[in-house]
Every structure is written in C-alpha cells, then in structure tokens.
Amino acid sequence: MSQSSEIAVRRNGPAETVDNTTPPLSGAAREALAAGTADSTRRAYSSDWAEFTNWCEANSRPPLPASPETVVEYVAALTTTPRPRTGRPYSPSSIERAIAAIRTAHSAANVPPPSTKGARIILRGYRDRLARAKDPAAKTRKAQPAVPTALRAMLDTLDRDTLIGKRDAALLLLGFATAARVSELVALDLADVPETDNGIEASVYRRKVKAFSDTAVPFGSNPSTCPVRAVRALREALAGAGRAEGPLFVRVDRHGRIAPPMFRRSAPIGDPAGRLTAQAAAQVVERAAEASGLEGQWSGHSLRRGFATAARKAGHDLVRIGRHGGWADGSKALLGYFEDSDRWEDNPVAGTGL
Image (cartoon, rainbow, N blue to C red; front, top):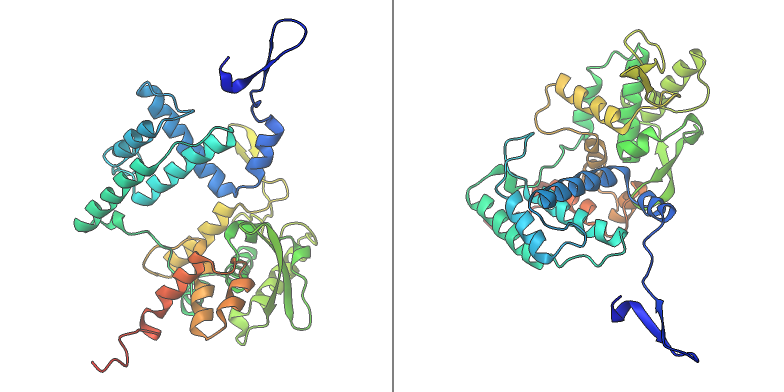
C-alpha cells in the first residue's frame, strides 16, 4: 500500500494503517454519467474506446490508465492505418473524437486523463499535411442545409395521399420549423405538438442543453409547405388508423400498416409502439434528397442547419434564432452556420471599391 493511499493512526499499540483509497464508481453512478451524455456521442465514444483498448492489447500497452506516450503512439497509428470500412486512415475529426473518448473513459473511471499535448501536435501536423496535399479529408464534412427551396424539391418526391407520405412531409417540415435534431424529433409524442389558433406549440426536449423548449411554429403562407397543416394531416391519418396517442412519427410499411412487427434472428426488435429511430428519421431526409436529385451530403442535420441558414437570411435576430432552435447562447456551431450563409450576402469584399 503506497503512502498516498494510507494513513498511519497511532493508538495504544502499534500504528495501524487505514486504507484511504477512493473506491471505484458504482454501476449506478456509471449509468447516471452515461445518461448525461447524448446517445449518439455515447455510442461513438464507446466504439472509439473499444478500438483503443484493442490496439493497446495488440501492442502490449495498458489502456487504463494510459500514458501520454501511449496516446501519442495511438494517434500516430491512426494517421497511417487504413480503416476497414473506408480503406483510408482516420480523418482529423475522427482522431479528435478518439482523443476525447480516451479522456472521457478515464474521467468516468475516476482516473486522471493522460496528457494529450503530444497527440495533438501530431494531429496538427497530420491536418496540415492533408491540407497541403489538398486531401478532402482535411475539411470537416458538413451536411447540406435544407433551405426552403431544397425542402420543396424533397416534398415534391412524396406521395402525400399515403400515410408514409404524410409522415415524411410532417417530419421534414416540422424538423425544419423547430430546428430539431432527429433524435429530438422522433422523441415527440402527439401530445407534445398541440395545435392552437396561431399554430403549433411544440414541446421539444433539447438533448444538448438538457432542457425543454416550448417552440412556437406558426402557420406557413403556402399550404404545401406549412408545417402546421402537415402535422394536422398526419395526426388525422393516425387517428383514422386508431392512433390518437403515442409517438408522432411511427414506422409504416409499404402496405400502410403502423408499427409492423420486426425481427432479428427470430427476436422482436424496434420500439413496440412503433416510434421511429433517429437513424430512420435521418434516412427520410436522405431518401428525399436523393430522389429529388439534390447534390451534396444530406443527413438529418440538414433540417436544423437549413433553418439556421434561412432564418439568418431572412434577417431574424441571432439570439432569437438560437433560442428558437435550442442552441446555447453564443453557440460556435450556430455561428459557423451563419458564417457559411453570410459568405455572399454579407461579404466583406463588397463595398471596398474593387
């Protein structure tokens, strides 16, 4: 037992040693920590940590606690080792996430995280090398913004006389109007989107800021792109099928059946109530973008980014935009969206006399 983990206590006899070592976190505490992290982040970190521990085992290095030298060696390996899925080394952003996963795993285990100064020096050099070679991996991949023109093109690909078409139209339009992440969107129940005289008052749980926002969604000027009318049409269709409560966005098969049973290796899977997963909601966006012939990278995040871009272009106050969409005040992500949308509309070269 080390000096740092014991205290000598003098009694009437020989000194006793009392173990002062801090016990590891309990299972309940670990679950509580996990609950405070977004599902997508937790899954990504879990995968990154598993890859790191496998690498450590193959290279006879302890993963916990990991030394700064181990992290340096690991990051250096990531810059040169092809990934099985892509055949290319990790991108800088993926390596950045791997470093964060290592530090998070140490903190969760109540172990001081290793210094990552050396690893980040390697990462800076790797990013510079990719940029000089004009490798696309040097740039952060961003989802295309689903601005209204893109949304209209996506909506044109849907058969809105069918239940699937009504669901997908409501998902696209409400996702845009609330600037919700797909995980927040699929968490909505019918009771969370009551219609009022002015529109919808959506109660959206914002995962990143860990708070509900009462997001006002007014009627649109065009019935075909009005989120209120789209949600109303979906609600009425669900009610006609006997679904007056429960999830707003549910899985529907090609025959129009709601929440059809799904199995994997003979075991039932999926939410019993039929709630869509965030991945399935993202695929709605991706399919509609592909069907409409839109170029670029499209994902569920395109709706959130499209709202920020369009609201900024319409001249709305930056703070109001952020709070409507559940961004923290001063969010760097939101400011990045504004910078992208302002490249031409608010270009600093204009008016300089050229």
